[in-house]
Amino acid sequence: MPGLMPLQSQQTIKPRVLYITSRGHSGSTLLSLLVSGHSQVVSAGELKMLSNPDPQRRLCSCHRLVPSQCPFWGAVEQRVKEQVGCSLDQLLLVDGGDDTTFMRHNEALFTAIAQVSGSALIVDSSKSLPRLSRLLLVETQGAAFALHPVHLHRGPFGSMNSARKRGEMIRRSAFNYTRLFFLTRERLQGVDALRVYYERLAADPRAEMARVMAWLQLPLEDGQFHWRDGVRRDIHGNEMRFGSSDQIRVDQSWRQQLTWAQKLGVLVWTLPVRLRSRWVFERTKRLIEPGLRPFP
Image (cartoon, rainbow, N blue to C red; front, side, top):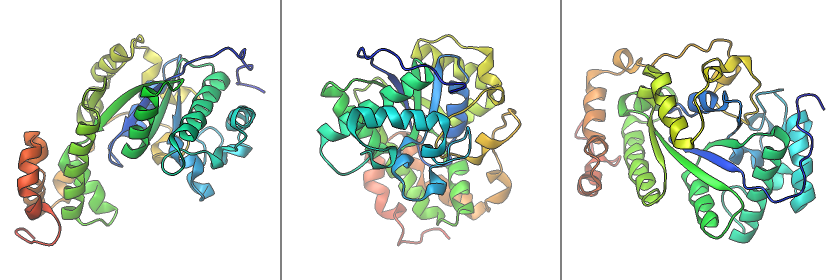
């Protein structure tokens, strides 16, 4: 099969997995593309979507096909079936089932991706904090993979503007943004995790990627900044993965698109995040939570 690695020996391997957790529209696709431009890395995209019932939400970026029809993902599925007897859309990837089954299914998935791609490191940009929490739990129970969690954070104005364009209430989105920030920070307490800021990544990708790759103990490669030249295997993700340009710019459209009243609201409602204070959040969340209207 062209472009695929031959099946490796059945010896035990322990794939390394870079897991990106973030809110939606926070730059996870950009970070995934930059990391997976490395010669030893493959980006698998949002692996949690493999079990999504909507076929259009399971398309790969290499062939725009559902996994079972894609040469790469078809080969991954064959190896997973040999290990656990399930197709990719039957895997336990987020909720439900017992932890032993969750561990076995994800071990089989990561190992199959590593074998088919021949890559030393897999990027899982599922973003889901519940999925990450469960992966961290089974890792402590002896799972055959090594997790490297990245908390990707986008500033509140850009994040709220993206939410507004999707039709969400800014105030509700600001509350969820703040709540998720502290939940993620608490879940990663004591874990060897890296925080990456979207604005820094987009403004100076070379400097920020040097920091990311040093944390991963892999050398930075020039090819990482020309990701369009390679093949990507991502499941689901932002439409930028199908574009033709590898130019990176910080999205600051919020400056023109948010009204002054909206900016003031975001400034107040996300104050606990900027202060990095869960204490402030606990004492002000009744004012942030949708329902009261101190600001329009």
